[in-house]
Length: 112
Image (cartoon, rainbow, N blue to C red; front, side, top):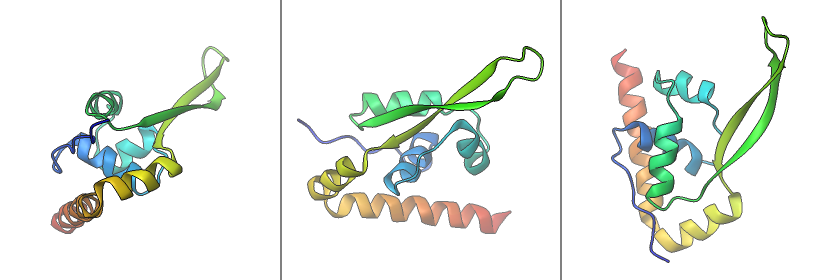
């Protein structure tokens, strides 16, 4: 099996991967809060196509205001045991990617 390909750090894919590599389970609302972009579905699709083992889990939401139906949403993550094997496989590249994403987020916050 070939190693997954890293996305560009300054991209929505990079932001999503950075969050998941830190062990976070992210929803669309988490992603929107962090990146100011609502569309998480496409970055997840692109990460999966690049070989990242992104899993999803459906969680119950609240009750829809107008229809009265129960809602649900997905959270996306990388299994913790898979994260351990990725760290062994990719070595320092994984840590460098996480650090680069964190540095970028810190610079963006300081600019605003």
